[in-house]
Length: 124
Image (cartoon, rainbow, N blue to C red; front, side):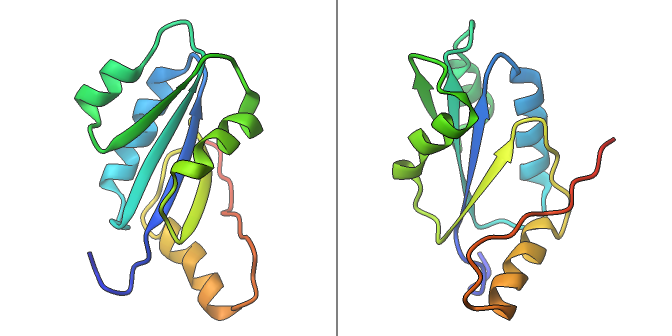
């Protein structure tokens, strides 16, 4: 890892959309930013994705919720498991583009008292 890259925790909530979630994980792997951890909260999907995720994405920590807590509740469930200096709450139907995380982190360097940022959303 480059020394100037802080650890960023990506928090992802899934509910019955494993295909989208896998596409997100593929885009994270290909992304230019490399110092991250991924925490996936599965919100009581009909099919438990833990085994598939463990096989295909062993770097992803999976938390299986017994009930659907919604997006905010799923994110809150993940927070105690995050080790990053920064947390990035990301929808599972997102795809990362190169420079995404670097651009967000640059804002924190530019404005030290900044509490949060959001990327520009583009629809395919």
